Length: 176
Image (cartoon, rainbow, N blue to C red; front, side, top):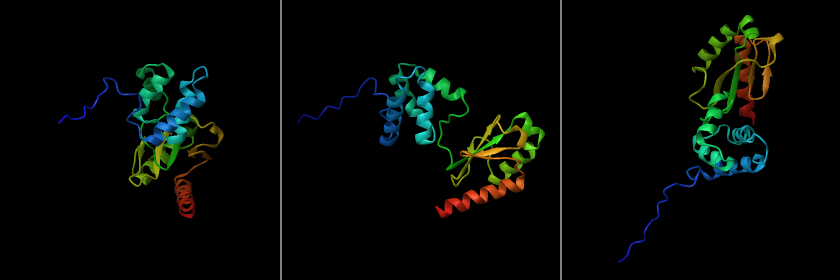
């Protein structure tokens, strides 16, 4: 009795190990931006917008489709702090660390946020609700300390206001 022979490719197809929905999102981003000059950044932004992060497994597919090396793609992802290779929480808190916010007390806010959430920068709470990210200017310098949750900017944030904003988001999530 002859057994079926499984052919194992020497080089697997780039992105073959991506789940179907992630692969579809990456391919859609590539389709939308591949003809643009300097397509890598728009592709990475589109992938992160769709998935919340750029999966490590997507790097070979993006590199192959844009005729770049994996190192070039990885280099861009790791250079820009905006891109992440790990899934973030349902909400991302961007806490401004620029000089104007430092002059207005962001160190106190930073210590409070880390303690309140029980995490450090670039970490996610155990319940998956919050990821804390440092940023170095939100363009709200006259009203520091500032933070942004997802796409909503908050100014003159005290530790007390931080707690109130988190409660607002939590109650808004419960109502949704």
